Length: 328
Image 1: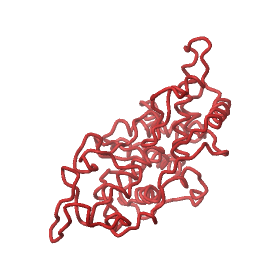
Image 2 (image 1 turned 30 degrees about the vertical axis):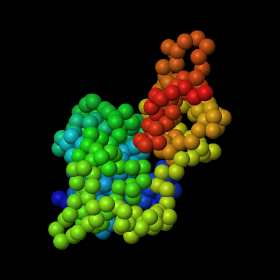
Image 3 (image 1 turned 90 degrees about the vertical axis):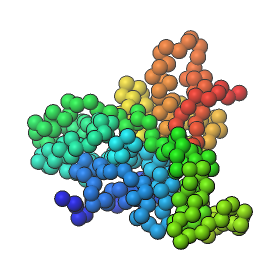
Image 4 (image 1 turned 120 degrees about the vertical axis):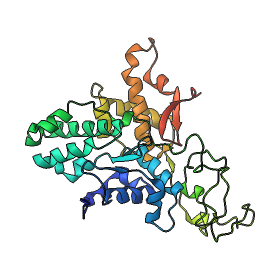
C-alpha cells in the first residue's frame, strides 16, 4: 500500500554534506524520499525520464546529473542493471527497525529487490544499526537475524552512478558524453525537444527548433536562462578548516587510526595548496589516502605516505581519487 507521509528531520539543514549539494541534487533527494511508492527499505524504481516530470523545467539530463552527484556523496545508490535505487540512510532515519515487526517488514522489502548490490547495502546499513544499538529486540526476530548473515556490501566500495558512459541518446555533443559538471550545460535548446542520436536537437511534434545554436544570444543558454545568473554548481575549494572524517571513513577502515591519518592528510593538502570538488570531493580524496595508508606496510623503505599521495590527484568530474601523475 502506498504511504501517505514521509518522516524528514529538520536538522538536515544543519548537515554540511547536505548543504554542499546543488539545488538539483537536493530536490531529487527529497523527491525520492517523499515518493509514495518508496519501499520499507528505502528503495524504488529508477526512471530519470519519469522523474523529470516532477518539475516543469526538469529534464532527463538534469535528473541524471543530480543523481550522479547524490551517488558520489553516498546519499543514494543506483543499480542501472536493474533500474533500482536505494536511499542509503533511509532505514536509519525512518526508524522502522526499532519496532520488531516493522523490522521484519524491512527484511521483506529487501527481499523484493532484484539488485544484489542494493540488497547487500541494506545488510551493511542494518549491521551498523545493530552495532549502535545491540540490545534492540528487533535483532531477535529470526527473519532479521537471517538477513544479517547475508553478504554485506559497503556502498563506498561500489562504482558511483555514471549515466550513459558509452554513448546513447542522453549524451552531450557526441551523443555519448556524461552530463557535464554543471547540469545546466546539458539543458536542451527548447522545452519538449529530445537530443538525437548525434547529440543534436530533433524536432518534436508541433515544435520547430533551430538546427544550430548560432541564433541564440550568447548571454543565454537556449532556454531563456541567463548564464550569469546560474551559480557554479561544483566549486573547487581548498580543504576546509573544519573538515573531518565521517562515519563511512571509520566504518570502511576500522583498523586505521583515522583521526591521526586525517591530521596528516589535512597538513599535506594545506601545504600543497590543492583544490578539490567541494566537501564530497575531499571525502573521496581522504578515502584514497586511507587506502594507500592501509597498504603502506608494503611500501619500500624510505617512501612516505605523502610520496604515495603525490602519485594521484582528484578527478573533479566524479570526485574520486584516480592515479594520474607525480606532482613536481
